[in-house]
Image (cartoon, rainbow, N blue to C red; front, side, top):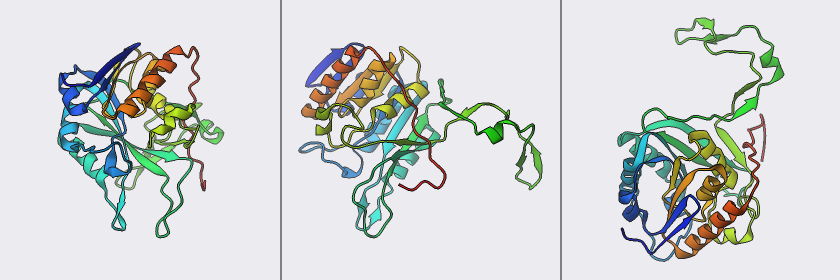
Length: 283
């Protein structure tokens, strides 16, 4: 196995290495939660490069039956138009045998200075791939609006234009949350420690907590092959999962180790579900 450093912190193992060298040495994992260095939207270190297809094949090879891979990506604007790299990646994952279980949106409750020729970019995709049927689905619930709870019956429109009684149970106090998740992002919002923001592209700790809660159980193993500042393993430490993280850049690896150590020292954990979109909401 080729790696520069290996650190074991609690139930998490962190490698400073190229994930293409570490992934073939791993056993099966129960879930993958990661945000790859897509479309060169951030600089991750001198001379950095990666091969998406090789990495995707390796990720697929370590996923256990029923495992889920949460792939958080966006698209670069190049020569005046979006690259659509995210869609190309999603199709490739399907072509190598994974199911596209859910297409979700990570809505950032903040945005950079807007482009003059297009609407402000405030979201990234969260593609949820699964190897077969997901073995764990702890779907986050949200209160059902009162006027929907009191109905005695309801109908649905069929493909041929006729109507029939709803197949699912109605009148419940709760229902599944929408697949658009809103998080506050930016300095001291995505994370609570200033040193974390030395990494150029962290995603919110709450996002990692929500996905790991949704697609895994306690003591299962979660992989992040592009660990970055360590957000996925911070969530593993707080939720009682085993974590494997791989990060090539030494300064980000150091940040990740520091964050995971701190997470294991925190005694309490409050998990707040993502905000839901409001009808007609403008940012």
